[in-house]
Length: 231
Image (cartoon, rainbow, N blue to C red; front, side, top):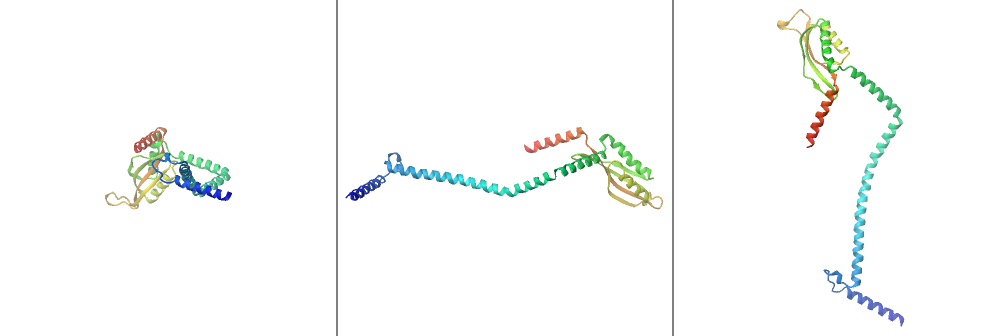
């Protein structure tokens, strides 16, 4: 008899619950009975939590994949830094050696005030070998990042061995002078002299370091140009 009462009550409750879901106006959820309200709230809360969890998990997956992609690079950087740390003492010695070598090279570059003396040394090297200068014309100075380059158009005439000795003297100058575009040939025509006289045409390039005012001006020009390009 008790089981029949329980079954009857459950059936009545189920029927009542079904009645609460009938005829609901979706535009006025505030007027719904309590059971549809609770059901709608439950499903809405589940949907919000699921959507938030999906979005959060998706962002975390992207970040995790990005970190995984960086792993080989970080390992390589770690190995490189470990190798540098192991060889730090040797690297410091090499740096000191490089700095000393650079200082030695800088000493071979004349300053702006010493250029006239260097040009005179080149001229005297040719005259000292008995060569005749038909052309000795300095060109326009070309300013680089840390030094300036001066080309000199040269044409001399003389005997073969004297021309060879002249080029050796140029190479042995205390300052750096290089010869480019060498052309050697017999003197012909009305300018032809004794037998065995040759001519040599070349471009001698000498270099000098920039003084501080030139370095400052070049940096200011670069900064001005960079600022103009960024606009």
